[in-house]
Amino acid sequence: MSYTTDYIAEARQVLDRLDVAAIDRLVALLVALRQRGGRLFVLGVGGSAGNASHAVNDFRKICGIEAYTPTDNVSELTARVNDDGWETSFANWLRVSRLGDRDMVLVFSVGGGDLERNISPNLVRALEHAKQAGATVAGVVGRDGGYTAKVAEACVIVPTIRAETVTPHAEAFQAVVWHLLVSHPSLQIAPMKWESTR
Image (cartoon, rainbow, N blue to C red; front, side, top):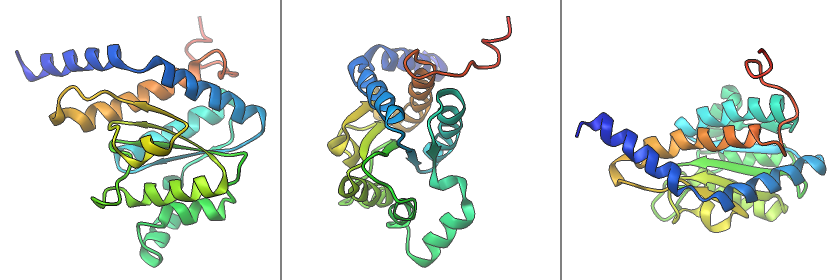
């Protein structure tokens, strides 16, 4: 088999193994968030940061949920990293945003953060702050052993088919999951362009 054939076969297996109940829990949390007028803060690093930015647009435009991500303001993010350090960059951004118990933090990550291995410590510190603030925590991640999966009220774990393709599948299926969320009948309030043009 070619790599392309293998990769597509793995993607089919990921789809078949996604936890539908976890996705439905995330839908319910987002519905409740909108009903109480809370804000959604989407956190991601690397490719997941790009996904966070795209998802913020969709949650705002399609679902009418007030949403933000720290990586959309590169000036503030780099100032925080330069002056305060990477580890606290997201947590300090959430503090200034006055994160509270009406709000929700949604993490997109391959591993979900791990302080012991110094992997995405900024996500861990942000989630620690979120828990202290009483905010709802959720995630779409590619590993079940990371910090996000341990503390989230709803966490969709992208199944690992092969260790060599954890990152591409985790980041690709973050997009599958959030597009499912924003198009879900319980969340979508605005039509998407091509679906409304027939």
